[in-house]
Structure formats: structure tokens, C-alpha cells
Image (cartoon, rainbow, N blue to C red; front, side):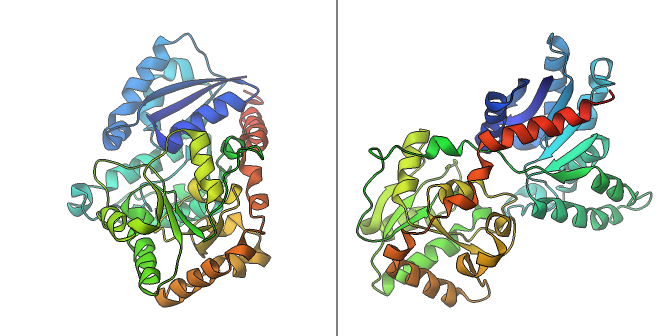
Length: 373
């Protein structure tokens, strides 16, 4: 079976997902992609360029797997001579309808953000099947779509939401988790004191303000800990990172993006606690990666996080969000009990997300769509 994977935003987690599946699938996966820049233009115009690339290629796919950044109706209309009978799958890493837009974004301020949501909606409508990376994500989009459509003046077509629901399911993100694992002789020695980790993107939706403010409060209490800050940094990022670099400088073991996977894995292996304050996570790849390296998470009980922990253990790893002082106190207890934390095995909860397990699930799901075609 030949699979055309169409990715307009070939960067970060989108690129890792595409390359990971192509590497681990038993089928032939050809990636058609554009660089991960100018995300709004990629959603508008990327389909035109990718359609040209696909039509000019000699590759005839048995199934098309497209990410949510693609304007799928445009792509299919341009390639219809080649794709008219090809099953098409849309994979939602995120969606623009329930994603928290930055208040500084001029499109959001001016009310021009609906078009990106409509691209997601129309793409889901024309796909033969829709995959979401988590059950939370699936429910969030399907629940938000009726209200979104009712905001239009007429012919709102809200019954189409049911059609999308019937052809949608959950297919979790595949990750190269085993690359993060180290041989026994490579594992770094942990410091005596607890190591707190940040390994998310340096962006507003990850809510770094609450994370670092909690650490500032612990510092004022005289609590001793170490800090490792990783994650992708962009030209514009929340200023709290610069403040934290100065105020917590005596506690910092590392502060900055690490591109090399093995080095990234070493910092995860050295860390103990992952306090998560994110406003949005449709799957939580950085959380899963940390957990695979036995970093114990402290999570808000919402978004996709409950799906990564057995329900009977939720009380151990989740905190109540309506009390910041309680969150800080909980984090303090974890720091003080670090010797106990280091004996926990949280990797067992997420190891099934490795591509060794997920690629066969993807292969089976996509192959099933070609039957009868």
C-alpha cells in the first residue's frame, strides 16, 4: 500500500509525526510537505502548492493522510484527476476552533479568526475519515462546531456535525519514545535535590507565568530545588522566561532548547517533577516524553492529560486548579519527597505511544479504508 502524507507545516511535532510514521510503517509512505513557517498562509495557500507537487510527482497513492493544517477541499479540487477515487484521511493534531488564540494576535482581535476554523470544518466534512489524537480533542471540536455554525446568518448546516462525528475516531499520536531511553551506563546521575522540568514550547498557551510564579513562591519559602528548562523557543516568547532566568539563576542546571534527541533524553532522565500549567494540550507530547523518562507529572485534571493516567491513579497525579496556593503546597511536598518519587514508574502508562506500537495501528486503520476501493 502506498500512502501520501500531506503536511503543510513540516516543523516541530508535525514533522516528527510525519517522519516517525514514514520510518516505522510497513507500507510506502511518501511525504509531501512545506516548511513550518507562516502558519496562516500555509492554511490558506499551502494546499495549492502541495497539490501541484502531488500532481507533478509520479506517486499514485492508495490512501491520502493529511494533517489539519491542510485546506483539504482546495487540495482535492485541484488534484481530482488523480485523487477522485482515493480514500482521504484527515488527522487533527490541533484545531483552530478551540485552540486559545493569543490576545496579541491581530486576527483574533479583529474577529478574523473564523476562517481558519472553517477550513478545519470543511476539511473534516470532505474527508472519508477523521482521526483525532485524543478523545478530549474529538469531543472538544465536535461539541464546539454547532455553536460555531449557528453564528452564520443562514444555511448553517448543523446536521453535518453528526456526519463528521460518525466518521471520526481516536488514533493517538505516535512518538519516538525509545530514542529518549538511555543505556544504563549513559544515564546521568541525579542531583541530591529534586529537579523541576519545563519541556514545552515557549508560548502563551503553555501558561509559563503560573509555572514560574509557583517556583518564585517556593524560592521565597526557602525550598531548595534545581531547574531544567527545555522546549522550542521562538523569536517572540513570553517575557517571564527572561525574568525566570535571572531570578532562578542559582537553581538552573540548563535553560534553553536542545535539538539533539539523545541530549534531550539525558535532561529528561535527570529531571524528577513536571508541574504542568498549560491552558491547552490536545495530546501533550512533551508530557508523555517526560513521563516515559520517569519524570513524575503534576497535572490539571482536564484537556488530554487524564487519558494518559489510569483512572484509579488520578488522585496521585492531578491537582485542583482553583487554588494556586494548594498547587504550590502540593509541588513543595513532591520536592521534599523526591526520594519516594524516584521510585515511581510512570513510564509504564505511556510506553504504548511509541511508534513500535502505534505504527501497526496506523497501518491497519489506513488499510481498512482501501478495502472495496
